[in-house]
Image (cartoon, rainbow, N blue to C red; front, side):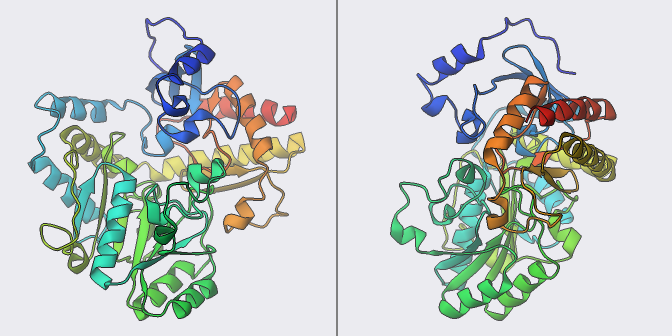
Length: 436
């Protein structure tokens, strides 16, 4: 349970009002403002294991887990100690360190598709840079993406985006030039025919296909059998690159990411979140000939003073070492299955239509009646009742459970969760669902 603090409880409404005087919308990332679920945003004071403590000193079981990277929950001692040891020797150098090499070697070992990689500070930077590498290598300008998949807030891919863009109803952001948006071709997820048509319509113009192999930014959605294999076949034939965005799934669904589950080898992979152990770190990597386009090897420029930050690298290395030594995947999957089955039972008992989709330690409760059919694309996800989720979220928050503050986001279970936390959350869920 979260550590006891000596600070006085804060009034969240007053704190939010204060924040709005200095921060845009009172937050540093839009979804934190609770626009989709209503109410006053939660300000977090501390976390330990599966629990967080709000600035109001209330405790919450956490299923958001900083949007996925906290595989072992909050403040796992080995990860904290690694970051502390690193920062004691200096917080940043803007120069190469041996620790970066060590982490890169571990990532390469886990994902055989990666021959060379480059670290960045965020998934957006990594995705943007992967797109630049793909365009430089193929000498083509267009990129195919799938409606509802989110690849960071870079201009060219913030089109029909999922994640916070979906939550806020801003699938196309203001400030993105039309000419830039026109370099992206959007097709429905799980629709190979649409992909084929996009290539036919844009003959010899498509540099890459970007895809979340298991989408988590429109909620957890499953690829059809043969879909990812079809993308691999089409891109090879058309001399385009296949880019797997595994910012969420990388090391979350399996040690080597989703690509090790389906046995598909992408040309480029985008990683984030987990490889920093909870600190800002991301990476992109893949085929040596493609990655050699990046400076100083090639003509495509990308740089960052904080890329490979010592503390983040140390935390990420500790995280990967723990994942390999403790192999928590089966246990987290069991916990997730237990919770989702309990949630289905609670929904039936409350008479609330609820479609729950999960894989590994990721899950999403969609407030929609699909008659048993899975949600497999953006259009299906958009049928979910956002207002019902908002009411459910608020009831769960009141009951001591913190969920992602948006209907179209994945929730996560960590190795730190136990039956105790899950039973606590299921009791709160039954009460919350009945209140709807």
